[in-house]
Length: 234
Ligand code: ADP
Ligand code: MG
Image (cartoon, rainbow, N blue to C red; front, top):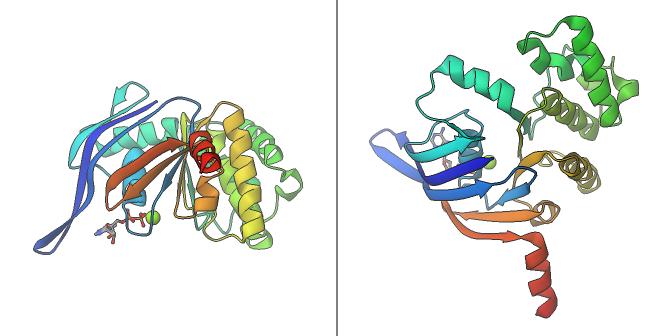
């Protein structure tokens, strides 16, 4: 689903340049649940933003479901983003004056779906995250966990090829974080490909594979099962 080869990214800051991604190689198959873990500043968001076509690499190659992502103009990139990818952010990024169901339906609006069909489909997705009864409520009336569930439903409603989550539990307490991760696991069990960026080992442990990023380099890439087996031997 995702094939990344020797990806580099630097940020220019005045006369200086900060080399953030230093030759990333990463393949993700359809149906995987992968954590990209690393401390703050290691380049996780930069990598996820490139995978999400919100940013572009300086060099290297990136192929998404067989499509080379390179030299796309803004319009094409936006089209692909809408069709291929779902996003979840730490701060939920819901629209405050729109109800839960209207928030969920936004990707369908951008796909040109008619209002009735849009709301019907969005209700189905709200139901799947356990929020059917909250459809007509505004984000301000929802708890943090509920807001993130709305964001998860919104990210999935367009049936993306890949779901990208950047520190999705960063604003939630521990219990709520685990509940949201349970939901992520359920969505993965249904066959969806998911990348979870996190600096929290407990959250990474709830994925199936952990890619450890350090100073812009992948220093470890292992299946969680394999890590557990090793810990057991030790
Ligand atoms: P992480 O998500 O792992 O915390 P980031 O990818 O956000 O790391 O950032 C990696 C490094 O790049 C950090 O040192 C950060 O300050 C820097 N950085 C991120 N975005 C920008 C930007 N738009 N301009 C300049 N520097 C940036
Ligand atoms: Mg980050």
